[in-house]
Amino acid sequence: MDVLEFIIIVIILCALIFLIYYFIRGAKGDVSLTRPVESRVDEYLDRRFQSMVEEWQLVSHPKLQKFKEQRSKGIEQDEARLAELKNYESAMQATLVSLEARLDALEKELAQKGSTKK
Image (cartoon, rainbow, N blue to C red):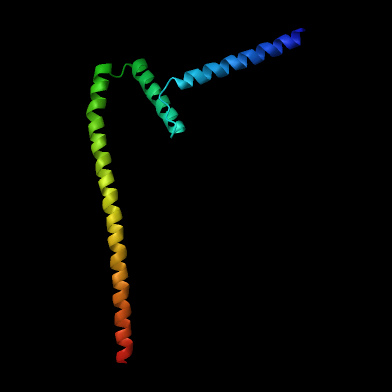
C-alpha cells in the first residue's frame, strides 16, 4: 500500500464519519415524517432562537417560558377564529352561488316574459 492509497482511504473514512455524525446530529430532534422539511426548519429556528437568547441574554428562561405560555393560548384562539372565518367564507360562497343562480333564472324569466309581450 503506497501513500496515495493511504490518503484516499483516510479521506473516505473521514467522509463516512462526517456523514454518520451529520445523520445522528439531525436525528436528535423531533422530525415529523409527514412534513420532514418543515419540521427540520422549525427545529433549526428553535435552536437558533434559543442560542440567540442565551448569547445575548435578552431574557431569562423563566420569563421566556411564561411569555410562550401566555402567547400560545392567544395564538390557538386566533387559529380557531381563523378556522371559523374560513367556514363562514365557504358558506357565504355557496350562498352567493345559489343567489346568482336564482338571479339568472329570474332574469331569464323576465326576458321571456318581455319577449312574449312584444
